[in-house]
Image (cartoon, rainbow, N blue to C red; front, side):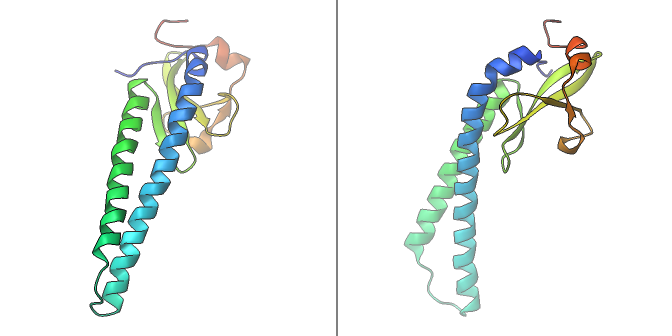
Length: 146
């Protein structure tokens, strides 16, 4: 069962979530870069008809990729344990489940935004974000019913 946040609860977690998602974004970039380097090396071998692969460099890239993946998984697990949903690490997008008029919706935040200012329905996604207004604030609540 998901955790439902009142916006004030989500805002209290925002600093910690920002730090974790920031690190996760860097790890994703590192993972992707290592994977691309490995692919480029393999492609070069294929194109050159059997050029000898630099096994040491390949092992270094593989090790970096695996280390980044392991740390990234641990961070994502930590964010999920908080009850926060990781949506897109390319832009640092996360959602905090909440209840609006007793229907599950999502408080939406991405890195670089100063505060949680948007929400959207479960099927609408990022493009369906709506500004949080007084009507929303008056009719949403978290698990505690606040």
